[in-house]
Amino acid sequence: MVRPAHRRPGQSRKAQYSLFVAYVIAVTGAVAGLLLAILSVADPVGFAQLRIASQELTAPIARGTRSVIGSISGIDDSVGAYVAAGSQNRRLRKELADTRRQLVATSSLQEENRQLKALLKLQQTDKTALANGYLLTSTSTSSKRIALLSIGRNLGVAAGQPVRGADGLIGRVLTAGPSVSQVLLLTDVDNMVPVRRARDGLPALASGRGNGDLDVRTLNIANNPFKPGDILVTSGTGGLYPPNIPVAIVVRRQNDGALARPLADPGKVDAVAVLRPYTPDNIEAAGRPGPATPPAPATAP
Amino acid sequence: MNRKGPRLGEPASLWRMRIVPIACVMLASALPLMLPLIANSPVLPPIGLLFFLCWQLLRTEMWPVWIGLPLGLWDDLFSGAPIGTAAGLWTLASIAIAYSSQRIYWRGFFHDWAIAALLVAAIQSLAALITHPGADAAHMLGLVVPQIVVSVLLVPLFMRLTGKFDNFRLKRR
Image 1 (cartoon, chains in turn orange, brown):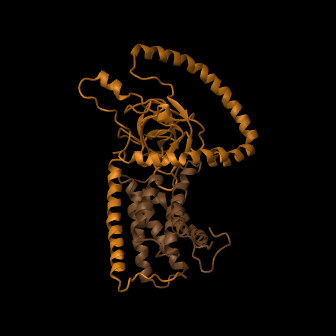
Image 2 (cartoon, one colour):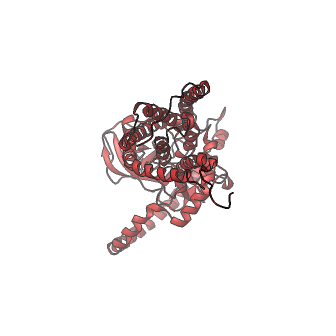
Image 3 (cartoon, rainbow over the protein chains, first blue to last red):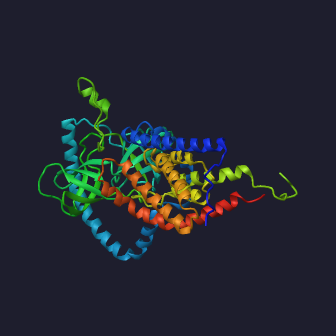
């Protein structure tokens, strides 16, 4: 039982005024805070530096806990791996033999493709990774899916660069700080990625659902063409993500598209690579007369 | 420092009385970004918010009613929600707690639990709607419902923890 509060200040004028002033500050502050929130939704860049500065403070602790505990979400997998080891081994061997055969077939195609591309002189930058790091931690109490990357401006990371893991796309850099940077994950509600189906190049848009899955919608109005098991890769449209990075696998058909699961789980990926934007604006500006338009970032309006 | 031990009737350290609750809430707000957890959905309960509400329910007169502004602003830096969301919503929560403590004269455990549950649900839903204004509102609310359920079930635990910290805060030297 909590003691009742003595909110009534009695006869003292000073106490009455100070209570009144506290309420005035609180109400105006609350209104100002909500206005600020609306402002920072409209212009997220303005406050990004403030946020990255505060996360520079917690990053050393995150580095420490990560090295001590490792990634928490990997535990269930390592237990499951022991249980299913025998059958998995047989299956993987069979898959390996199949894949080798396919690899031989693909390598000749790749060579041919390289020559054709050299002929076309496609305008694209170096495909190698800019820098490698690992994901330290992420926001886990709000509906925004932002992860903290262990490298920042010290290794050339800048806002807008795509981030990928070995299995597929992870997201893109939102803000780069001196030694850490924020990555907007693929599964965030505001992250939209232009993709195409790997099999036939059907263009589509993938957007996060906020719970680890992706919504996929086709661009052309047709009957729902997706089937479970379809692999989606980045298409390179919009000029941010380089083409042919694996993104997701279709799990289920829906009314207006499909539900897909990302191929790279940020909770299990060990190292990530920061890539150069596919067509940086300086190249676009050189090839185009008049004022340069920055490459359209793949975000929802 | 009195080497001979505490004197009779000596109050607890004023600094500790002031700093413990504020440091507790600030540390709890920053804690999720110190754990090596890459979340795919809002999985952790809002620890900072739970401590903030529990301190106010336990010691209604300890803080002025505008304390949600600085503490909320600090939480915004770490939660990922747009800056100002928690500053606004937490202050409104303090006003709601101050009002309820005038209306319900002798608050019991279940009153406290109900007030905290209601405020956590309202704050987390509104924060999700503010964070993604363009998204489908029903989908965003569905996203935070599991988190709200877990948080509501954890309120008694956080109340106990706050009580422990409060004992430390008021401990005589």
